[in-house]
Amino acid sequence: MTTANRIEKRRLPRKRGLETIADWVAIAFLVVGVIVAVIFLYMYFKEDAIHWGLLAVVATLFSAFVYWLLFRCLAEHLRLQKKIAGLRFDGAITGQEEEIIWACSHCGHVLYADHRCDYCGSKIQLDQPS
Image (cartoon, rainbow, N blue to C red):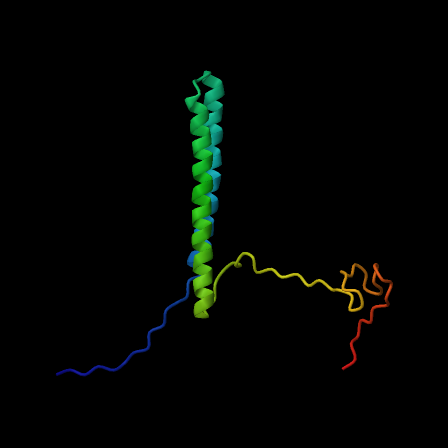
């Protein structure tokens, strides 16, 4: 009977995540679809074709949009799964941008200036005492 020792193997991480590749494929489908639609439109006007040419243009643009949306959703889904698992992911999850809006503590209206409230005229303290 032979014995073996455990050998440490290391995997090299990919430079790009699968979600980034899905984003690139989505953009490629959209660009190719628009190019094909422009070619169909050119052929339609050049040969004075029947209305099937316009239908082909609309169908091509619609299918390019649907494929773009499908691959963008796939990329978003991969990012969300990686975020839940605690893994690193490429790109950004949509809808995650938060904006800080300051409000006056006296009247509650949104502040547009840093030093005073435009609605009630209260002077705004920038440094809060601790």
